Amino acid sequence: MTLSRGYWREPARRLRTLETRLVNLWEANGYSEVMPPVLLPEETARALVVGGLWERTLRTHAGGEGAFVLRSDFTSALACLVGRRCTTLEEPLRVCYAGPVVRLPEVGRNGGAELWQAGCERVAEGERNQGDGEIVRLAAATVQVLEMPDPVLELGHWDLVAPLLDRLAWPAEARPSLESALNRKSRPALEELGERYGRGEIWFLLRALLHLGGTPEEVDALEGALRAQGVWAIWEELRDLESLLRRDFPTLRVRLDPTDVRRWNYYTGLTVKAFTPGQPAAVLSGGRYDSLYEGVGRPFGAVGFAVSLSALLGEV
Amino acid sequence: MRRIALTKGRLLGPSLEWLATRGFLPQGAPGRALSMPLGDGWEAVLLKGPDVRVFVQEGAADLGIVGLDLLEEEAPDIYDLCALGFGRCRLSVAAPPGWSPDPDRPVRVATKYPRMATKGLAEMGLWCRVVPVSSSVELAPQLGLSDIIVDLVESGRTLAENGLQEVRVLREVEAHLVANRRAYRYIDPWWEGAA
Image (tube, rainbow over all chains, first blue to last red; front, side):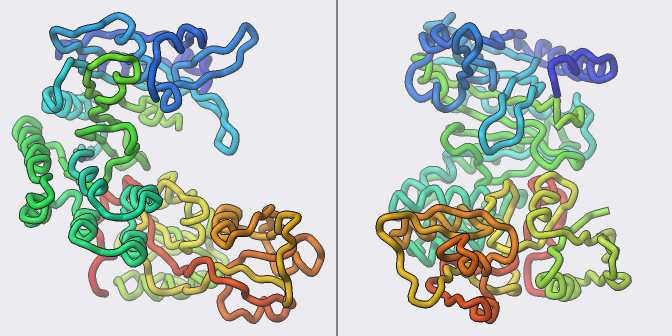
């Protein structure tokens, strides 16, 4: 999708309709629309960012007038904006956005693209999981307002799986393969890794969790093992969020998928995704990413989600 | 209509047999048609292996049957649901008899699997330069295109007929059932459990 196409009459009308519906919903829930800049001179961006945020989420491009940073991702662009404006947050900051992100071509990948996204984010100081319920409810309301056919909302939690991975007494070199096996839901790959590096209680638990998404009662049956590993409370948090959704959105299908935690180096807690039959991948995705604000030197936590408007419009 | 992408060639027959054990029977012989109804709202589409990955990942097919070699080589963004127990072969290094690496230059390796070849040869302590080819890999050493090859080996007959011998097995390979992220959430897992 090129920038100019965003202004063609029919695609633009559909895009604006979706954006308006979403922003109206989010503003009605106390979120204020903000628009981080689409382009920053590199030296301005570098002055804002510390730690690993640069390598993870910002892209530098050489332009005619010097290097610049494009908004390739809203969450990191928002982190730069909020980090620059706010040193402390007495109250949670609730912001939403709608607009394009730009991905330039990279070697070995498909050509660049301009993708339209809309999303919202709750940023607060010194909290671990407060606000998760608020964001999950807002994600469910978002799915409803988008009128997607037969949607499924799915919840996961980094803290359910991460401690298991950390405690697995395997060499560090095995970790990428293990994460890949879990992300691909690959029982064969997990079996092979078990054979190579050794099977133990945690390995059996991971294998049991691998394909249990959507059938929470089966995970409930693993209570003893989850308690023994100190992650039962996290599962209960997920079950509470599920109950909240079933109460407030009784017609919405909700799944819990304990091991489908993608982008392992990004999320730090809850993950939320929405699927619809017409799309091969999630059209709404997000979660908690508390470490993002460390990258701009602020002690804030953040939880939010983004909707891929380009996917909903059939542009990707 | 739900769709399963099947790999044409040696995996097709066993794939159809496996589907039959799950109650899906192709209606009509494959012939030259590239799709066939399987009953119960399912259709099979017949593709080359690398395209199975594309059709499944992009959502044109819900499920697919593809060799583990392609899953490992291309690391697609799809779910690897289970190994199916057929299409077994091995990804191996093969070389002309008596070949030994020259320590002063990289080993030239002809292969359809650059990623796995590079990784496997590095584990053998070999520095390599990949020559990517897409067919008749066994010819490459004879014609001076490469020193060795990395390719799938089933019986070893093709290697022998082209003056090569298997040096090392890098990976055991078989057919796997794959799904895209949407299909996994919307389809009852009829593939699980005993047939």
